[in-house]
Amino acid sequence: MNITFRQIRYFIAVAEARSVSAGASAVGISQSAVTDAIRQLELETGVTLFYRHPKGVTLTREGHKFLRHSRSIINSVADLAGGVGQEPIAATGSVRIGVTPVVTGYFLSDILSRFRRMFPQITVNLVEDKRDYIEHLLVNGELDFGLLIVSNLEQRAAIDYETLIRSECRAWVAPWHALSETDVLSLADLENEPLVALSLDEMEGLIEGIWSKFDHPPHVTYRTSSMEGVRSLVGTGAGITLLPDLVYRPWSLDGDRVIAKRLRESLPTVDIGIAWRRLTRHSEPAALFKEAVHEQRR
Image 1: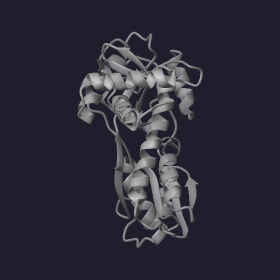
Image 2 (image 1 turned 180 degrees about the vertical axis):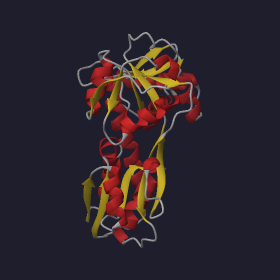
Image 3 (image 1 turned 60 degrees about the vertical axis):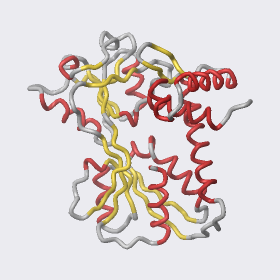
């Protein structure tokens, strides 16, 4: 298999922009060159990476798998470049991290993978729980950091934080839903639609907050704490949902398609960040973990 680093870069740009032209603009290369690179990737891998449509491109299931591997390759090359000519840091000790479920599933693995490659002798102790309990542990000094939805933090007088990802909310619908052909939806379009609510990591509260501009609560027909459950219910037409791009995937486990549609209104974002107790003096392992998080964001 003859795949180049340049092809991988172009593929990631197109996947993130959901458009060949926008991806080409992001990497400063002609659209034809990017199109040729994607075509060569598909020939070399033997799979279709994108669905092409008039509004841009959408990753196939195989495309999503290839995107994850591609990002891993990019991160590994960045680590290699950053380490050339430097002595490895033989740091030891442990760092205590609190995470919420959405962060565990959609944000944590890449950070941990990078940190363990860089500092294999540092032990990472994880505590997964609800956001309010993670805040409690931070304030009590029982955790070095929390990785959580910082847009919902309550104890801001005692906690400092940095936002790492700001994720916009979109409406998820089945591909054959009547609204799937509309480029940009409004909340009024969704007012009477049956809603699937994710009762995980305060996501249901997000939907309730968005719906507060109406004089009635959202028409919730299903509640589930399973992200895959939401995808399956939406993909089979049981309802629609409103969730951040961070957790969007175009396929359920059973192979049902899910389409994410932009909304005309300005909706609250879901902000994932790193938090710590104010005025804390971090240990060396904790300081190294924070720096690794910054590198991952860059």
